[in-house]
Image: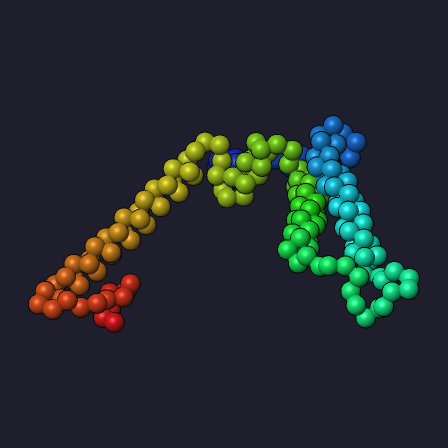
Length: 172
C-alpha cells in the first residue's frame, strides 16, 4: 500500500473553533469595531451637515420665500460632499475588512500569506512555486517566438512594398 500522506498535498490544518473573547479573536474584531465606531462618527457628521444645509434653506420669518436666503458656493458644496462620501466609504470598507479578517481567521500578514498560498496550491517547500515559474517561462518563450515569427513573415511579405499589419499579422 502507498503512504496516504505522500499523495495528499500538504495544506494548513483547520484550527478548532475559538471563543470570541480569546485574545486572537479580540485582535481580529478590533478592526471591525474600530470601523463601526468610525462609521458611527461618519454618520453623525453627515447628519449634522445635512441638518445644517436644511436649516440654511429655510427663509427667516418676514422674508419672501421665493428668493434664496443665502449665496450658494457650488465648489465648496461639492468639496464637502466629496469629503463626506469619502469618510462614509472608508468607514464601511474598514468595517467590511475587519469582518472578513475575523470570518477568515486572519490576524497577521503571515496568516493571510498562508491562506492565499494554500488556496493557490503552493506549500512551504517551494516545489509548486518552481513549477509555476517554469510554466510561466515556457509560456513567455512561446509567446515571444510567435511574435518573432510574425515579425519575420511581415518583413518577408513586404520586402518590396511596406504593408501595414495589425496585432495578429494580418494586413489592414
